Length: 571
Ligand code: GLC
Image (tube, rainbow, N blue to C red; front, top):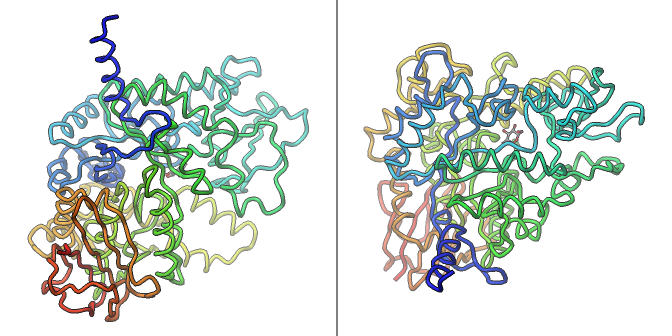
């Protein structure tokens, strides 16, 4: 090989891997660090054919809207063939499109439409488990000698009862399901219809890499690895101490060989394409998180930890705690590794209802304030569809209105054990994930313009006032504020890469920090309460330039109005 070809080959590898060299800290700029990811929940975004379920053609019809937000990437929840036990997180064919959502032609058109608009597409990859209706599982359960047997975890009944494992979604919380066909139990951390794949099997792993290549060859730009921290199991199935289910992640996450699998996945797929990767879950410590994402380890680009979203509780939360969590994560990743920042997704109820104040007086302000937080922190922001309108929890009061499978199973479980159903229903109003899945509120016509049919999940009653069409007309709406925030972040890499310094640390009502990079310094002030708050940041803002604020009149002096957010450039 000629010297020039060797150099060309090295450059090619560097460009496509987008990685730091082994042993070197990562300091470089990357597209996925600068990305602003908008999460589209396809089932609830836009229905094009009147069956009450959002679909790919619906998303295509809204691509100009997505582009108008300024976001640079979309994370799409699973759209693969699925019997829909868990809204697509139970895949029966990883190369097929769910009938409810459309066809592969629709998908190709969607991807093309996104790329034409300069938007990247990140797909969910659900490979901790498949559907029990996947051909692999059908074969696997058919006989103990099937070549697919080891694609899943089986425990033969003659060995006695398997060691207890807790299931997050099962009506009895039992992760082992007995199957009489071969007189054996199979493992399912989630529902019975989501049997766990056996990552110890190299043949299964190759199947997964082939699936990833199939989508990467189509030109997608990234993968979000669903529940992947659970994928590796200690298959000797040791007994866990009593109460382990209360710290499930400690026992289920980061199992043996997980890093080997990720290194293999990186070598086989991720490093060969210009794709980003993000894992759901970041283990149990900063060290775990670093081990997943530090560039020189050649595993993943990012992971997202739950510490932030877990703070919100029905009884409220402490801002000091909130500041502490986000500051600790930031400092742990200040010189190595990369974070993601988010306050909501399809597994959470609505951001403004959990972290802000969704009463009519403060919904708009507190929503804008929370969006300001997400868009001015270090890390890649993941922003959930509908939050740009300040959509709120629906808070259904009848169990019949809920659709979420684990919720319905848990309701049945509470009933079976004589639990407090009233209290359970109250909690659902605050935290059930259906709250964040109600149809997108496009306008004030029937069903918020989401569908001409009957929506699969009821529309939030407030769509008459909270909807995209109304907010388009209003220059001071949440929507237009969000666009300004996105534009601000995009034109100021200091908000992406800049050093973060927490100010007025012990103030229980104010979150204040600076971001600093290459001679630029921004000051962010956020009042998390419905009261006036005095900021003691040590900075005099009289000479600072206000770049964005959520009130129509500028902040002057040190007293912030309720839920006020302001971003300054310091001179
Ligand atoms: C992840 C998904 C969630 C799903 C679960 C099982 O947590 O985000 O929606 O129910 O995995 O696949």
